[in-house]
Figure 1 (cartoon, rainbow, N blue to C red):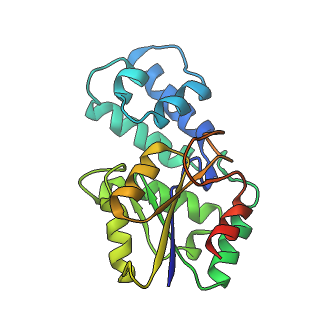
Figure 2 (cartoon, rainbow, N blue to C red):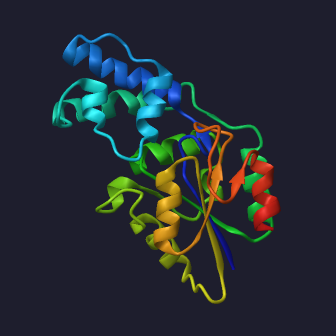
Length: 209
């Protein structure tokens, strides 16, 4: 058995425009702050260690009112501009056609992952779609990956598994779960010094198949 676990934002799909719009909505409504750029927001999300509430809202803690406003706004916003990267759908379909098991482990809330992947018509290709709200620690913790591997009855002596993401947290979570990481540079992060790098979705097929 072969298993491929995908990160979502910046790996399968480009969500930066909608995330930026919703973050800026909270900034304006609650803090009367000027809008942030997409580039700033993507860089902040991809930092290994960061305080997003400070970077986004200039508060030391993520206040419940900010979380509630972001989530209610993003629930509607998240499917307005989102799109799959070129070649992703074909790559996913080729993996499934080759009997490779595929799942998603995202640090985004599960509800948004389900909504976006459904909207983009790829949700049914995945066996498990899990967000950070379903575990006690997000990536780089291996908890989400372990849960997916357990779902398949993963046995490292007889099965192969990969984690594909655009972020150091994805690579660290793969190492922690004892599976092989692949860094995707077609999305939010255009370069990496990771050991295995894929510049296009098609390269995933070359590695896995």
